[in-house]
Length: 386
Image (tube, rainbow, N blue to C red; front, top):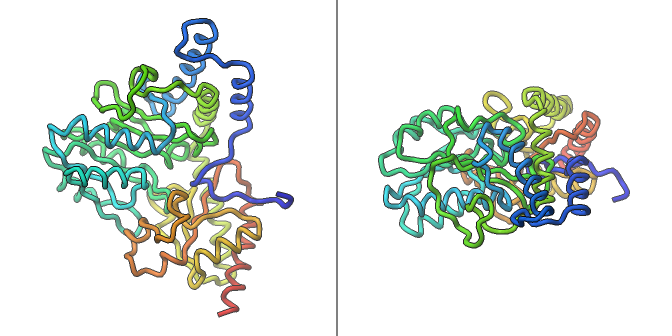
């Protein structure tokens, strides 16, 4: 691209950290050993994988042996959900999740419903949060899994993980957290929160695509979905992507240095820049969800009244700004956001007049200010045509 293109779609993916790119490039150029081989090159590759595993385990207060490398968040979610269901079907066939989960959670749930499992989808309010009393009422002796995201990928609502963990720990259920959107933006401690399974994707934290991990608490039993060799502590077959894992380790090391509170303050500042510009120019809008309470400020979802989502995205793209209409996994379809539908109802105009802006740690005030100006101009132009 000749012109400067400003990227504000970090909830979909993030640009790779230059340090990650350098580490991956070095590994690809100089080391090619199979981490399962016994010779020197294989042992060196194994050391690279083990060091990355250690850095990643520290990010969530896990043991190294509890980290299983996967192809990404979708595989991790599928393995956690389907693997738990298959391993524990003799205990019960009830599963609890929420209405606003990612498709890589909701679609495995649909598959399990087809196989005779009972799946309960907890309601959410207009801020994207569940009612813990509904969870308590639904948690029965035959419940084998409670699965919820840490941070919603469309509106940024943070689920009460500590409270959920405290509720679930004394039941028969495992507690699974889809941490793809929370990893790197909020602090999570799998031990204190009583989390049994947790899914993460590297490309959401300035790491490489097609790589992630599943935290699997030591001692729990989950059936393997893939069959093959004995890689990844005999729990996930397939030759390890050593260069990618090395890069993921660098990304995790950077996360371990970050002050998440300061990062959230930076993102909240970005939100204020945009909202102040809209308010000062009397743009008719509302926030989808909330920017107060338990939310991650890296995401700002706006209902731009009278401005169609497709028109907004096209106009902003032509002006040099990347934002989205919702989850990148569903935004290419004509289906309205299931998250906004759950929050506001199927007839709400928000479903066709909303955009999602999502920040990353490399964004600057100047970039956000430029975007805010373009957003105002676009809304004013469309309003004048009506």
